Image (cartoon, rainbow, N blue to C red; front, top):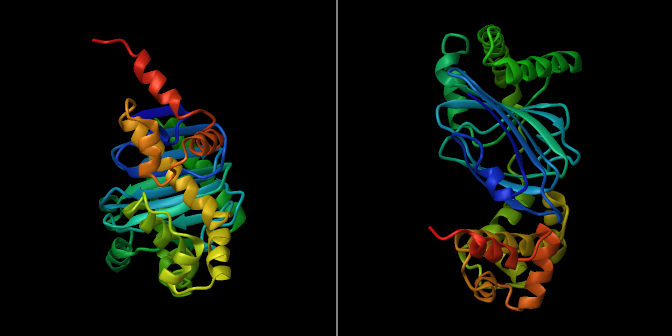
Amino acid sequence: MRLSLHTTDVFEHANALPGWRQQYDQLSSGPLEGRLEVTDLTGIQVFRERLNQQVIQRIGFPCDAIHILLTLAWPQLDSSGLIAERCVTLLPGSGECEYRVVTPAGMDVLCLSVPRASLCGLVDEEILERLRTTVTPERLRLPAAVLAEDIRLVQRLLKEGGSEHGLELQRRLTMRVAEWLEQTIDARCDLPRPSTREYIVERCHQWLIEAPDASPSVIELCKRLKVSRRTLQYSFQSVAGMTPVQYLRAVRLNGARRALKQNPGANIAEVAERWGIGHSSYFSLEYQKLFAELPSALSRKFKSLPVS
């Protein structure tokens, strides 16, 4: 199965990848331009994803598979230091774990999803078991020339997966994945501990989702977390490249937009108040800045639909 999509809506883009549970929140302002190419074979799934805006990605991975990210373009270094341009990253292996990452505007990535069953006999069982329970990403370090050749192999499979050469490409790529995974024995001891900065941002994000109509100040957030204002500000700048106020406002606006898309006939002012943005004119202004359209545009689309 092959799929090629051009998307202009962050929520539609998040839901377009077959077999994955994803929720995206757009952080940077402007119209969204997304591209998604997928080749889904019996033994392996390959996709290429491109987004022109900065996005919070919350991902629930398909179970019983190994997921590997190859970055073609990654303009901003990941706060954990594990994702960077032109590198290979082994993504968390637990299907029960929700992985969260802030992807930079202009990202362009290839991703492989390889069933564990296809790696049996190629990779030591102990390694596969350890990968099954891992909850943090790992950088796989490859020489530049080897990485370039591997990227070309993945791109060929993406384009030719359904052709007569697809099966041989799939076999070659599965062998390469097995070779990458063998590196985890030595690489695992070099993993950094979970970042305090990531935890601070994630905790604030969760508090907002749990009580979207509440609007705690920066000082209140600092008191809850028992950190200084400087630490809070630095954490958000490091993880998302923006202040806590900017980040949380973007999450609120995404929540309000999601609610309006689910119920286009809803009262816009009530939705805005429910997401902690009570002043309607301010809500409309900030909404338009982020999504390049007014919130009323969804209502107009709803009203213009033909009645069956």
